[in-house]
Length: 155
Image (cartoon, rainbow, N blue to C red; front, top):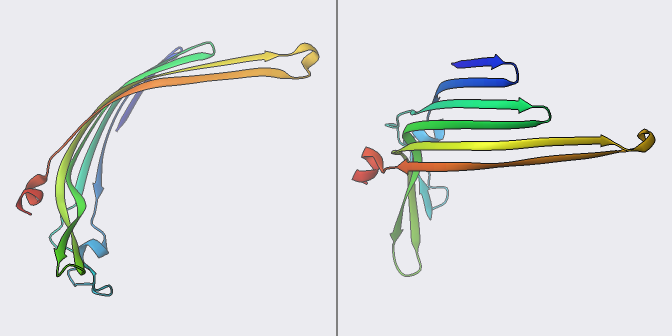
């Protein structure tokens, strides 16, 4: 869902999206793959899809050849599908890795940003060339929080 409002040289926008990341057949396949006897892989037929919700609000302003953009974003992700690997030591020289997939965590991302852009163009004498200068810069603040999730705490 998107909403944009334009007024002269200004724009205000809001957006919301919800995405689903379904497990792949490899991640769901419950059969043990032992083609490499030191790296054993198996799927997890109990995997749930991972859902992500994205929210964004942004304001932009254009003044002649200069622009500024300010925005905030929020992302909530649940049941993130992750590879879980267990290392088993058989003896001093033999190590076996057993891996599967689990719904390991949830994540909350919040960030804010500001970007500035300027463009300068000047034709030289008799139009035999031109001087062009673009200056871009910005600052972004990130805040990410994650947990081990239900399955991650039991492992």
